[in-house]
Amino acid sequence: MSFGLVPPDQWGLDHRKIGRRRRTWLLDDTPFPQIVARLAREVELLQLNCEAGKKTKIGFHRWRATLKADPDTVDLWHNGRGGYRAQYYLEPETGERANRLALDRLSNIVAAQIEQDQHRRHHWPRAQVSLLHPAVRLWVYQGLWLRHPAPEDQALRVERWQSHASSAVRDVRKLVRWGGLAPRETRIRMIGQWLRDADRKPDAGPPKPKRPQRISDYGFV
Image (cartoon, rainbow, N blue to C red; front, side, top):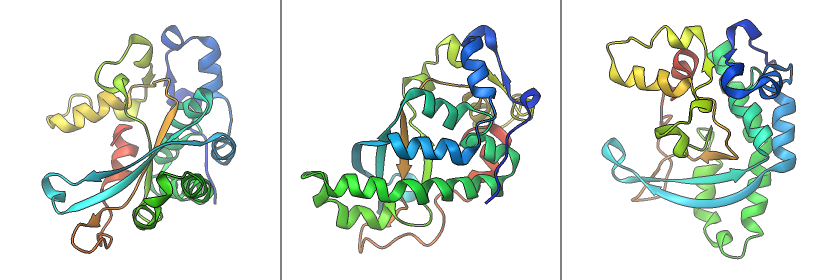
């Protein structure tokens, strides 16, 4: 698998908001596989929960695992020029390969931690159908910074994303605004495939078919 680094002049991190040290860290040439390797060494399961479907997903449910790692590692993952979003920026298909590589490295670790937990392991026979499905996606945990960002969170300006900031479509403007955030987060979510309530079988299609292109175009999904 080949991954890349976004050219520094295209990954606009504002040193006035995040500081020189952090900006240098995020613009360093750390390759995506190395970021994933860091995650694999550090990751710790915080929460396993089942989410009921709403709106178009009524009658479905899915499982989500919330993972914790060192904040510098999660920073590289979400905000670095070699990180998860950066791979989608380079090409949607590259982003999808990045998602698969990370899941290949993390899924067994997360499964082992669930099975070793005396409470969570009882849910694993059902949860693994959702969390080990090929349609599983990873994403940064969307904490308070999403709705109430601090000034230092509003530090990433990518021209391609910002070119859509005046879109007539409200949802696009929202994604661009969120795409410009570079939060200091410690958590990542593993989001499982939707399962039918009736028989607990996986949904046939991907949960968000336009997800790869949206991350590439807007920086968020």
